[in-house]
Image 1: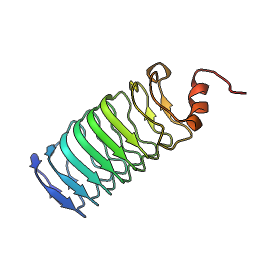
Image 2 (image 1 turned 30 degrees about the vertical axis):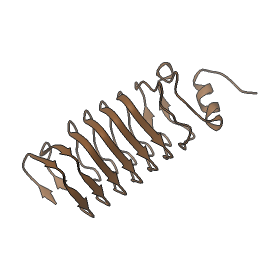
Image 3 (image 1 turned 90 degrees about the vertical axis):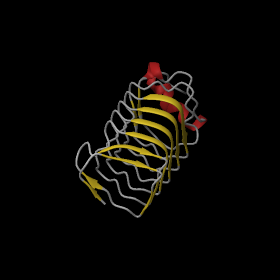
Image 4 (image 1 turned 45 degrees about the horizontal axis):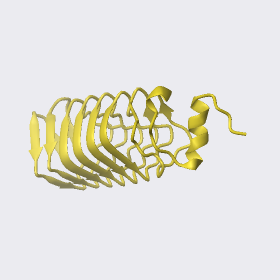
Length: 171
């Protein structure tokens, strides 16, 4: 699907669709379902996406910077190198995604759930993580601002990584 004019999508269902569009042609998606779609390397910055589902999509390098995402679900997507930096995420659920080296830098999180994702080398720098439960996610390292990692939930196997951020050595 090629889009070359400013467009708002509402109540649409897309399956096995590859999107191509120029910058700033999409301003909003509302009540949409995306299944097995390819959004690789697309620019979604400053977009609004509401009450929508991304399932089994390719979001490799997709740029969501400074976007407003509300009431979304991302399930079983390939999201490596996706960039959500500077975005507001409200009531967003990430379930079983491959999200290696994904950027959540300087995001505003409210009711964000991260469940069973691969988050290796994900970047949460300058994002407040209080109340976020990382315990079911897999990673050996990721970027966080230590002062903003307070009151997050982790598993026992993740504890050595986080204690090392504060210079604590477990013997």
